Length: 436
Image 1: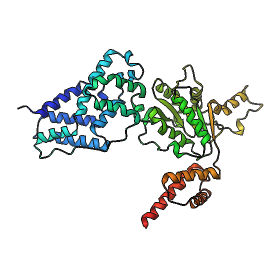
Image 2: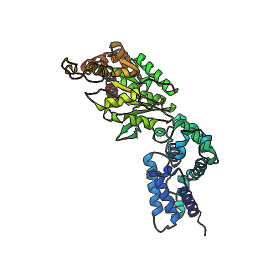
Image 3: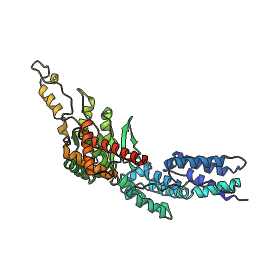
Image 4: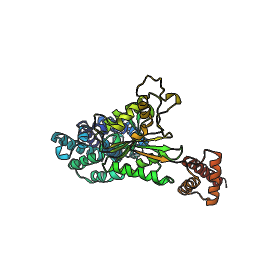
């Protein structure tokens, strides 16, 4: 007697095995658990419990990721890196290899079959195999927030009767938004020679930051130039500690992530990798800010030379999609000592030229934005804005009085001090409300 569950699962196994380009979509824990579940159902041995156990592993993988099967498959499809997606982001659709387009069409049709095999259907197969009175629980979750730029392509795929016919639209998506890790994350970090995505970046927004409107607007303007494809300037944000320099750069990724902006943090210890990083970003459709926090150099620091190459260029043309934004508490980025000043007895003939190169290094950034120490009015403006965002029920006079007292007793007037004060005040007011 025919067993529809066995036949369907074996058919899907063959389909999954036939993928030519998009094998990566099923390479994660969820995809592998799905394939193991198909295999267990296809074996048709209800006297053992392989299918039940496999369903449990698949359910666990979905619950751990907090995604439905369909949602995860679309995520993986849109971020897939393979010859087709890489070529699609570099070339117009009409210029792509016909064999790559044909392979992509076939793979998308296969992925649509797998997409339609949801938890409810698999649960019914398991129920039939084991004569269960009820099917296993189907994993369901509240849909995660979809980036605005992905909504259209997802709707196209979900509503399409044949994903193979959507190849031009999918290729156009890769062309505009890229693939791989840069399609998955808006904030990344360079670590151990690789890009590492930051799944939960600092949520600070531009609206959160007040008090330094001039440098803020100049930085926004320069970033808009970058997004528009113009030759944006490298920027050094210089000023007092706690003034919000780093937060302002981080806020840009949250503001413009949906427009293809990516923030890549590079630790000072890895600045020697900057030329290699820039080469990796060449040709990607996204726009990149290489972010270096708290920048300064010691004498004969090799990182000094690496950053200089990126700022000034080399034999390679400067990519239009990459800029460097660095923060520093020092006006002169290369640390200088009195003993470093040229002496008449110095063996270096052009010692003053060397000294001038060190002192003028910050000038190699096209734009220098200065953040002065916060005065009383600026500090209180920041405090009021943060208190409003936090929804604190406190009189303005009391708020300002306590904020000034806090600044005196702690780290002085700055955006960082204001944030620390509001965090403390919010917890204090909440604990009092709870105790009553």
